[in-house]
Amino acid sequence: MADTLLHAKGIIKDFPGTRALDRVELVVRKGEIHGLLGENGAGKSTLMKILNGNYLPDEGEIIFEGAPVTIDSPYRAQSLGIGMVHQELSLVSELSVAENIFVGRLPVNKLGLVKRKVLHQQAREILDRLRLPLDPNTLVGDISLAYRQMVEIAKAVSLNCKLLILDEPTSSLTEHESQILFELVRSLKAQGVSILYISHKLSEVFMLTSRITVLRDGSLVGSYPTNELDEDEAARLMVGRALSNLYPPQGAAEPEVVLQVTNLETDKVGPCSFSLFKGEILGISGLVGAGRTELASAIFGVDGWLQGSVALHGSKLNIRSPHDAVRSGIGYLPEDRKTAGLYLDFSIQRNVVAAMLDQVTRAGFVDGALERNLALEQMQRLNVRSTGPEQVVRTLSGGNQQKVLLGKWLAVNPKVLIVDEPTRGIDVGAKAEIHNLLRDLVRSGIGVIMISSELPEIIGMSDRILVMYGGRIVAEVARQDASEELLLSYASGRGALHTNTSPAVKGAS
Image (cartoon, rainbow, N blue to C red; front, top):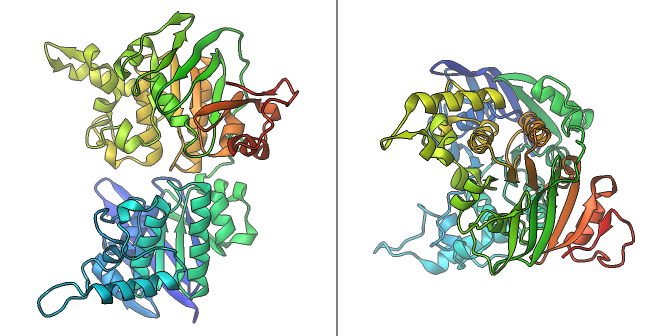
């Protein structure tokens, strides 16, 4: 077709012991936003790395602008006009916006000195084209994450990008920052740039794209006009089954208090008071910066207390460190599993026992057989998909990494588990699994506190919801009375906190 920009035909890619892509086909048209969907492990990343020149396909053909091409390096991809913005940005914080855009291509004089005025002018032209309100001389380390992502896109555009691949571009952005990105994506489309948009957030894909390609287990499921599908059908195509149980049924909370937090205050949050009851998932909602993660960190002993107390089953705890919290029966899945929760270059089994090394160590050495057995127990319990307990965690999909992190805490038999953004960056199938696992934990008697920025998830999973604003808990909402509008009203400080008469919605301190 005359309007086809990229046609990847019959792409096959094998790795030792597995076929990552099996005769996959992808067609991207000129000036379109095309969504690419699939569970973690479906082959999306492998296909993107082939298009970006990181891998060569074992079989198949890539046709770009009507001609067969060999993309054997990222440099070759750039020369063709293919750019990619990864989840992990490649910018240098100590360099300016302009220097990052033109890194490796800085204009220099005969003495090798950078022509600052020329650099500034060239960067200004790119930023103006993208309507980005950035000063080319500002250090990248001084701008928000959203605008850093814009600088990555500006870098690709400066290379005369014709196809821009965006991999989970909003995974770490706030709602407001995401809207800025969406405006930029639409602007690029209007300028004739094609966008290949990869995201686990189906609502974004359906809002932005005109066509969608779905992969499953390394094979092509199909390509569809976006307006011929809905989110439920797309999810079914991705996982091969209906996901009617994305949010499992509520349990029956018991009057027994598992965790009691009273006037807890640190230099970042508080004072805060709340109770966690047996048999419930207690959700904590709020905008970025409201203090949700800081409250969790305080309970877990990361930050010192200025005042207040935490009691478990009626007994006050003396928590001065995470080690104290673990010994007391509290586990914590942090929001960034890759930097704060897991040892990515260690095996599954070593990660599973990381919070209980004193229990698997004999005379200063880890008991390998015991370590392996504990890991196998959690892997079976959580349905971790891997080649075995010796597999390095970095090589697992995001969903399976999150299961390993969950297994690490379940191995120590916690009484309370705090989970911060438990499904961030994982696909819809793995998300449903995590949701069901959390509900199973609650049924087994573990108290769960869940922090999430996704309002549908908070409403769908929580039995009660606490809303934070300005470092304090400002409202408590029962699940049956919760709506996105109500939670946002409280989270933005607009709720009538002390005048609401509903027993399910009340002001809290």
